[in-house]
Amino acid sequence: MNAVLKSSATREDGKIVVGVADCAVSNDPTAEIITYALGSCIGVTAYDPVAKVGGMLHFMLPTALDKEKGKEKPAMFGDTGVPLLFRSLYALGAEKERLVVCAAGGAEVLDDNGHFRVGPRNRTILRKLFWKNNILLSADETGGNISRTVRFNLADGAVTVRHRSKEWQIWPH
Picture: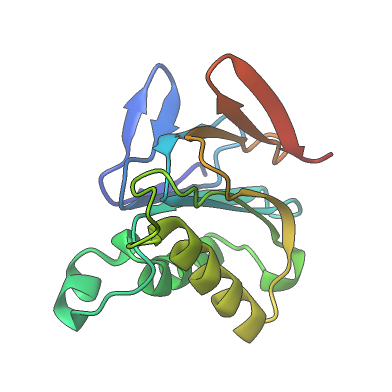
Protein backbone atom coordinates (compact mmCIF):
# COMPACT_ATOMS: atom_id res chain seq x y z
CA MET A 1 0.00 0.00 0.00
CA ASN A 2 1.37 3.41 -0.94
CA ALA A 3 0.22 6.15 1.40
CA VAL A 4 0.92 9.82 1.61
CA LEU A 5 0.07 11.74 4.74
CA LYS A 6 0.24 15.45 4.21
CA SER A 7 -1.28 18.72 5.26
CA SER A 8 -1.38 20.97 2.19
CA ALA A 9 1.52 19.55 0.19
CA THR A 10 0.74 19.34 -3.52
CA ARG A 11 1.67 17.05 -6.40
CA GLU A 12 3.60 18.68 -9.22
CA ASP A 13 5.01 16.67 -12.14
CA GLY A 14 4.92 13.49 -10.04
CA LYS A 15 6.67 15.16 -7.10
CA ILE A 16 5.24 15.86 -3.66
CA VAL A 17 5.86 19.56 -3.11
CA VAL A 18 6.14 20.68 0.50
CA GLY A 19 5.44 24.36 0.90
CA VAL A 20 6.47 26.73 3.65
CA ALA A 21 5.07 25.61 7.02
CA ASP A 22 4.15 22.19 5.67
CA CYS A 23 5.00 18.53 6.09
CA ALA A 24 4.52 15.38 4.00
CA VAL A 25 5.39 11.73 4.56
CA SER A 26 5.09 8.75 2.26
CA ASN A 27 5.80 5.06 1.87
CA ASP A 28 5.61 5.25 -1.93
CA PRO A 29 9.07 4.14 -3.17
CA THR A 30 8.59 6.07 -6.42
CA ALA A 31 7.92 9.35 -4.62
CA GLU A 32 10.19 12.34 -4.65
CA ILE A 33 9.54 15.04 -2.05
CA ILE A 34 10.80 18.53 -2.76
CA THR A 35 10.75 21.92 -1.07
CA TYR A 36 11.85 25.22 -2.57
CA ALA A 37 13.44 28.41 -1.28
CA LEU A 38 14.77 27.43 2.12
CA GLY A 39 16.25 30.70 3.32
CA SER A 40 16.00 31.11 7.07
CA CYS A 41 13.48 28.24 7.10
CA ILE A 42 14.73 24.71 7.67
CA GLY A 43 13.88 21.60 5.70
CA VAL A 44 14.17 18.37 7.68
CA THR A 45 14.10 14.98 5.96
CA ALA A 46 13.83 11.65 7.73
CA TYR A 47 14.06 8.22 6.11
CA ASP A 48 13.71 4.66 7.40
CA PRO A 49 15.64 2.48 4.90
CA VAL A 50 14.07 -0.75 6.19
CA ALA A 51 10.42 0.37 6.14
CA LYS A 52 11.07 2.55 3.04
CA VAL A 53 9.20 5.40 4.69
CA GLY A 54 10.28 9.02 4.51
CA GLY A 55 9.11 12.54 4.99
CA MET A 56 9.97 16.21 4.88
CA LEU A 57 9.14 19.21 7.05
CA HIS A 58 9.62 22.86 6.01
CA PHE A 59 9.38 24.99 9.15
CA MET A 60 9.59 28.81 9.32
CA LEU A 61 10.10 29.75 12.95
CA PRO A 62 11.72 28.07 15.95
CA THR A 63 8.85 28.04 18.44
CA ALA A 64 5.11 28.50 18.59
CA LEU A 65 4.85 31.28 21.15
CA ASP A 66 1.08 31.17 20.74
CA LYS A 67 0.01 27.60 21.63
CA GLU A 68 -3.18 27.89 19.56
CA LYS A 69 -1.18 28.87 16.48
CA GLY A 70 1.09 25.87 17.15
CA LYS A 71 -1.94 23.57 17.20
CA GLU A 72 -3.45 25.20 14.11
CA LYS A 73 -0.24 25.18 11.99
CA PRO A 74 2.20 22.78 13.69
CA ALA A 75 4.49 22.54 10.64
CA MET A 76 5.14 26.28 10.83
CA PHE A 77 7.30 25.90 13.94
CA GLY A 78 10.29 23.72 14.75
CA ASP A 79 9.07 22.79 18.23
CA THR A 80 5.74 21.47 16.94
CA GLY A 81 6.70 20.52 13.37
CA VAL A 82 9.55 18.12 14.17
CA PRO A 83 7.35 15.98 16.46
CA LEU A 84 4.62 16.06 13.76
CA LEU A 85 7.09 14.73 11.16
CA PHE A 86 8.32 11.92 13.41
CA ARG A 87 4.81 10.88 14.60
CA SER A 88 3.64 10.79 10.97
CA LEU A 89 6.59 8.56 10.01
CA TYR A 90 5.96 6.21 12.94
CA ALA A 91 2.31 5.91 11.80
CA LEU A 92 3.63 4.49 8.49
CA GLY A 93 5.93 1.96 10.19
CA ALA A 94 9.19 3.87 10.63
CA GLU A 95 11.30 3.22 13.71
CA LYS A 96 13.30 5.95 15.42
CA GLU A 97 16.49 3.86 15.70
CA ARG A 98 16.66 3.39 11.92
CA LEU A 99 15.92 6.96 10.81
CA VAL A 100 18.40 8.82 8.66
CA VAL A 101 17.78 12.50 9.41
CA CYS A 102 19.09 15.42 7.34
CA ALA A 103 18.60 19.19 7.54
CA ALA A 104 19.11 22.10 5.16
CA GLY A 105 18.43 25.83 5.28
CA GLY A 106 18.62 28.03 8.34
CA ALA A 107 20.49 30.78 6.50
CA GLU A 108 20.68 34.39 7.61
CA VAL A 109 19.07 36.02 4.59
CA LEU A 110 16.65 38.65 5.86
CA ASP A 111 18.52 41.02 8.15
CA ASP A 112 22.16 42.03 7.72
CA ASN A 113 22.15 43.62 11.18
CA GLY A 114 21.32 40.31 12.86
CA HIS A 115 18.28 41.67 14.71
CA PHE A 116 15.90 38.81 14.09
CA ARG A 117 18.42 36.00 13.48
CA VAL A 118 15.66 33.60 12.41
CA GLY A 119 18.03 31.20 10.62
CA PRO A 120 20.38 30.78 13.60
CA ARG A 121 17.41 30.47 16.00
CA ASN A 122 15.91 27.78 13.75
CA ARG A 123 19.20 25.88 13.75
CA THR A 124 19.41 26.15 17.54
CA ILE A 125 15.90 24.79 18.16
CA LEU A 126 16.54 21.90 15.78
CA ARG A 127 19.73 20.91 17.59
CA LYS A 128 18.04 21.24 20.99
CA LEU A 129 15.13 19.03 19.91
CA PHE A 130 17.45 16.41 18.44
CA TRP A 131 19.79 16.42 21.43
CA LYS A 132 16.85 16.09 23.86
CA ASN A 133 15.46 13.15 21.85
CA ASN A 134 18.80 11.44 21.13
CA ILE A 135 18.62 11.97 17.36
CA LEU A 136 21.76 12.50 15.29
CA LEU A 137 21.87 14.38 12.00
CA SER A 138 23.27 12.19 9.23
CA ALA A 139 23.84 15.25 7.03
CA ASP A 140 23.59 18.98 7.63
CA GLU A 141 23.63 21.75 5.02
CA THR A 142 22.60 24.72 7.14
CA GLY A 143 23.75 28.27 7.80
CA GLY A 144 25.44 30.72 5.52
CA ASN A 145 23.41 33.20 3.52
CA ILE A 146 22.08 31.23 0.55
CA SER A 147 18.63 29.96 -0.31
CA ARG A 148 18.36 26.23 -1.00
CA THR A 149 16.01 23.75 -2.66
CA VAL A 150 15.95 20.22 -1.26
CA ARG A 151 14.94 17.02 -3.09
CA PHE A 152 14.39 13.77 -1.22
CA ASN A 153 14.09 10.47 -3.11
CA LEU A 154 12.18 7.71 -1.31
CA ALA A 155 13.61 4.93 -3.49
CA ASP A 156 17.00 5.21 -1.76
CA GLY A 157 16.72 8.07 0.74
CA ALA A 158 19.05 10.34 -1.26
CA VAL A 159 18.90 14.01 -0.24
CA THR A 160 20.06 16.58 -2.78
CA VAL A 161 20.50 20.31 -2.23
CA ARG A 162 20.41 22.91 -4.99
CA HIS A 163 21.47 26.55 -4.99
CA ARG A 164 21.07 28.34 -8.29
CA SER A 165 22.71 26.08 -10.90
CA LYS A 166 24.82 24.10 -8.41
CA GLU A 167 23.49 20.80 -7.02
CA TRP A 168 25.08 18.35 -4.59
CA GLN A 169 24.02 15.26 -2.69
CA ILE A 170 24.33 15.53 1.10
CA TRP A 171 23.15 11.96 1.87
CA PRO A 172 24.44 9.46 1.31
CA HIS A 173 27.85 11.06 0.89
